[in-house]
Length: 313
Image (cartoon, one colour):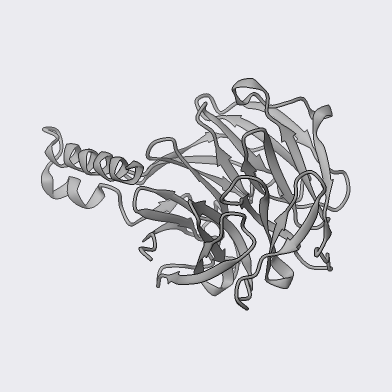
């Protein structure tokens, strides 16, 4: 039912754009929910968050700027100037707050999407950390650290209001987790039953189920599939999308409710992928920013977002 409502809303929005008395049909139709749209030159995107509604946000690895886009037109603008340090993974809530992973700064922050103001900042670690991704659960905003075997939790109070920096929880990872010298914890989401977390261990191509009370992890049985270059994730019901960035592929799994096993059901790719890093959904589509890690970044380097259909399996 929810998917049908989203599709209907998209159809109405497209129809409104086409029938607008101030815009010709010839110019409106191709621009309604474009399959691809540009980001600012030199932006160096990494994270994406969508919604509520057809609004997307992107974070810049270059300086932490937040760029907001209307998915109906592909047009956007910078709504929040970054602190000069990276913005990696992003998640938005229903109250106009955007949670931002701060990459090598070792921090996270919360941005008001209506004003662009920073509402809170969290110095998670003073060591060699890389705060890579974030997921919002019912009671906590969890962040991954790709260089240290631990997660950071920001408790969420009534109404989703975030806690003070002194209340941040550090959760060491144990069990099956084996931290090496490369990138460790990367993409992050919940299990289908909401009782645990799923974390990509990038350097080993593994997916781990994390007990948030103890930090103990167990490797998720993916039937032998290796998540090489595993990056951002998206969970929709029991369908898990995992971006494999340098492979230009989204691996799609059907999970059991507890998130202990998964079966590969699809692999999505596009000739317009150029090292996509993270994924978010609106209606029947997936949107991915292309980080272009194989292309030397300059102020003139072009970047774009690619839209692909969600799997139907």
